[in-house]
Image 1 (cartoon, rainbow, N blue to C red):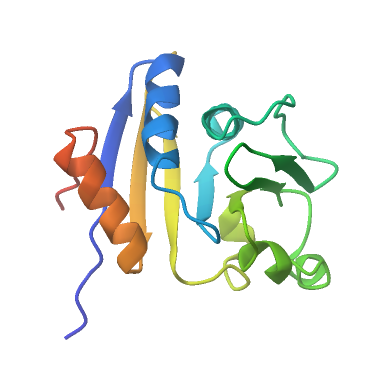
Image 2 (tube, one colour; image 1 turned 45 degrees about the horizontal axis):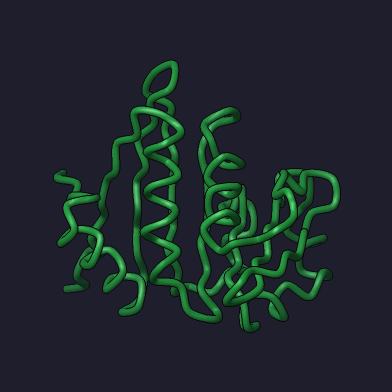
Length: 166
């Protein structure tokens, strides 16, 4: 019987909490890290992406790559590849050479990751942001792979996230 992967939860009361989650998560990044980000329109995907950029000490303004699809930033310790695949098809994405990013020397964060589910490496941290109030958000973290499970274990030990219960 296949073991169901753990899933975790983080409740944000506002932008400061979202930045705190991103900062703690970023401390665990290694080259080749993949974050798949999903959620409703306005849930805070770009805010979380900006927080990751800030935590990586990107000097440029991080904003949504909605029309450019991919933006590359130089962080202090590694590159930050920020993708927004909302406006492209799976077929278009296949032609973009995304593997160069996924298996590159930086961290890749993909907004609307579920659109290109078949192209993203299976081992990753999937994050779904749920809008639970005016400024409140619930982050659902689903790690796949030992590296990402370890990240969530570390964040759980810090008391930042907790396991979701069915």
